[in-house]
Length: 455
Image 1 (cartoon, one colour):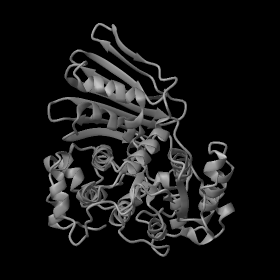
Image 2: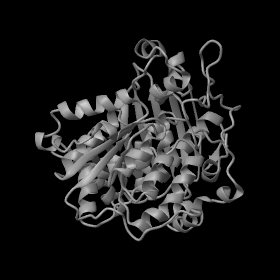
Image 3: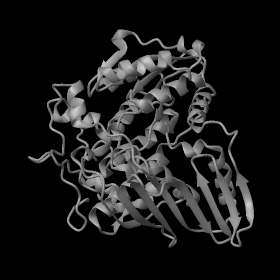
């Protein structure tokens, strides 16, 4: 555990939420050098691309980046493990999702395949644009390196797994502005047609004042990599490597599924409100997903997020098979309600149930592709898309929810932001032991509401 200085802790919610947070962040950057613009020439014929984190999401983002611009060349790959790099490269070379002329732009030489905890530094040096798609615990440090090197960025959500990581991301805000970097964050609902249309209507007052909402990511869960299966493939598997390969179930890497996944739905209500919560309380636990390979995270969370004007977002996320599935958001206002879904659906009704708007979305473009289309168009045109601030706030909102369910207490925004409990070490290598270890029976400690300290 690392304890931030008093200077780091002297951050309040109002400074963070308002655009004046840029001034606070600038004061915290110390000796970081600033440039007046991004280092890459936006009119350059070729744009060099590097991918940091070569799992499924990083590989998918590489496909979308190569599709977005005919003159993007993939030149470097970085991951903790070489087998992940090789799998990524093989998929890119064989996938039917990528046109043959774009496959010709895959130009990763053997000496541009970087492995280990410091691999990201070397890959970022080779590129004009970087994709950051490792487990989210690493995101603050990878963002810091990419920003300091003056690179344009696509980074997956969330941006951190603890308050300390969010503070580090905040330090980057004025540098991104000063260097005029493009930073797209993978909260793709902001690039999805049904959400854009309905949010515009909400912000134009068609629902009246937003008073409450319900947001859900209830499903059967995601993948799990069992230790026994990993040992068959990697006989010398260490505890560090096991947690890295099964990263979803460890908070220092993932942040729990309320942070890694449910952030999408939480972000939607924040977007509708154009605001962020001041406090939260909730409950959660492990009822079904309790075996050793499910690490330390909960399988369900329910959180009340309280906003300054008295409105409340009710948030549910659950990873339990055989239960009701629901991935959607409902926004309630004084004139009506809106319901949205990641499947492209969307509707608005008045208080009597009369339809105000219906969106089917069958012909809408893929928002994952739109993210990259707009990123590269902005780079080419000398523009700036900067999702970093909202990405940080959305991540902190989800972390606030985890703090509330793990502790069983009412946790304020300031408490979450200024938490002294740091999950992700600043420096790591293969000789380090993970921050959490199994007991003699192979089970990991799990948060106990009423006992667990989060701030």
